[in-house]
Image 1 (tube, rainbow, N blue to C red):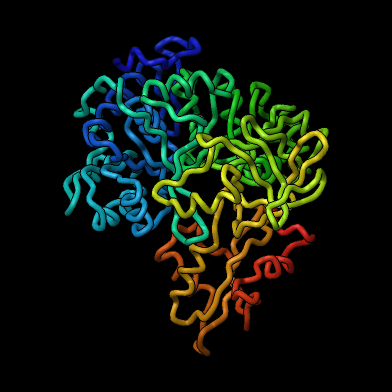
Image 2: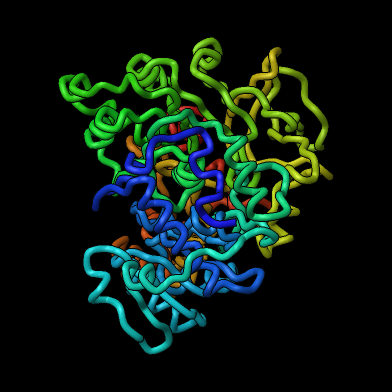
Amino acid sequence: MSINATPIGFRGNSSAKAMALVDATGTLTWEQTRDVLSRVAGGLQAVAARPGQRWAVLGDNAIPTVLTHAAGILAGVGTAALSRQLTASELAYQFKDAGIVAVVTGVAGLAGVLAAAEQVDLELIVVHGGEAEAAAGTHSRVEVRSWAQWLAQAPVISDPVGRPAAPMLVYTSGTTGRPSGTEVRWLAAAQPTAVHYLKALIEQSHTPAGAHLVAGPLQHNGPLTAVRHLLTGEPVVVLEKFDAERALAAIERYAVTSSVMVPTHFQRMLSLPAEVRERYDVSSLRLLAHTGSACPVAVKMAMIDWFGPVLVESYGGSEVGTLCRIGSNDWLARRGSVGRAVPPFEVLVLDDDGMPLPVGASGLLCFRAPTDHGIRYHHDPAKTASAYVAPGVLTLGDIGRLDDDGFVYITDRAADMVVSGGVNLYPAESEQCLLAHPHVGDVAVIGIPHPDLGEQLLALVVPATTDPLSAAELEAWCRRTLAPYKCPRRYEFVEVLPRNAMHKLDKPALRRPYWPSARTVAG
């Protein structure tokens, strides 16, 4: 089956000369997009020829990122969406874990990828951006080609019929301090081949026809929805970096009908002067999905007043998909709810002994799920098992309650996780890093309020010696081995940290002084 026989344009999209993709560098028509996709897909197949081999795509908000992931689905070649902020050691770990044989990156991420290539065998690096041609060449261990060079030499996609489906892989941090990969759960049930997977993605798409705006980094599950939208034959507009007024201008200019954002994006748009907000027509929007972290009630009310009842909130995770969903009208009637469970999931609220609690009582929020809908982590059976409290009953580690109509309310967080700007952060990574410092005796990293991001990381440090120790020194230490967004934003020095009889840090007690109420999570 050739690329022209695939169901791109399934919903009867515009002519070959119409806009398909837009980013900061320019526009591709559907005719151009089909041609490039056929070559990207062929290029992916030529290198990742064996099962289990993948291409890594660093999350630059640019056309090549969207095209590479889309081509991977078409070609039955797995892609892994990785952060361009990762250090060389972090990249090398994820390359090894995911079976990466080649990488697509922007110019800014090339140095980190090359450093990681000293630790991992890669066959090829493809670099895009303004200085890509100058960066191309053979380095000590790997060949580097510019995006244009690679496309010019890439074969057209071969027949993908029979190739296994290859969903994208994303990485999440965890309590162990090591990130774990998980396949993007756009579809609950597995599909036998790449062709079946593509058709199912299109048939089960939830986004309305029209342009879709990419507002967040293309390494996270929400923004990556744009890949699926493109494959339905609908246009995608990519913001290189989120800017509140530019986002509004793009919505008006391209008559954007859908986007995925996080509450931080909402707060930044609402903070614009009234005369700026009123300058742009946002009436084209039909769906503004939001996820990532709890949205403060006042912020969500203001957004609905401004954009209309187009906001849809999803609760879930990359490793399992959407567990609950709620539209604007239901939310207005039940402010603070994240909605009802999405079939076939069944919501349960359990006490400390694993017994069901009655309506209105708060406990561990769990979901009964069929086998093919459950949580799966790549190469991490221990983390997979830890997500279950009983056979077929999973949890994301939140505390919640149910009302009489089955609507779910999140009341607190049991898991040791911090949500900052819609990004899930597990303190274990930064704690392990800081404990390796010779002058750190003990450390606890917790989430505290942040006016823009919702939460931020705070490191509470017990010095190991009387030698001088500064926040700047610890910040520099963390940035040697951790991506910037994983590093604490604040450091405080304390004499002792509270621990229980099992010597486990009492995180709720540590968080409590920093929060204005008993609830120690944002939203």
